[in-house]
Length: 120
Image 1 (cartoon, rainbow, N blue to C red):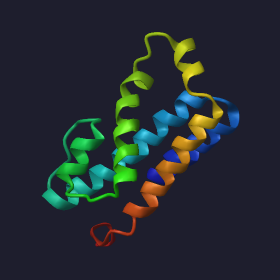
Image 2: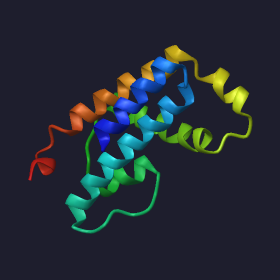
Image 3: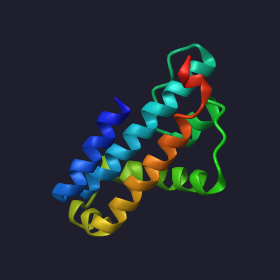
């Protein structure tokens, strides 16, 4: 599922739907973090979109750089899900920004996939 969401984000980048790039990046991260929470707690993960909360519940350690990015995409998530002004939102996230979100999301996912808890 995570790879499917990343592929969708990449396709959205190619077609100019930059807000959806960020939305799909957040969704991919959320799903992967929930896998960690499930592995850690042996329970169904909570119904939340809060990546920082999921990171904590999954007992995941990230570098400061990746943690900062996670905080940034976490804050943008609400805006991309429920935009008050779509045209303003679209102008705030041009191709270059959306591409950076996708690149950093892929970096985090590759980092997290190295964790042995996901290989059980």
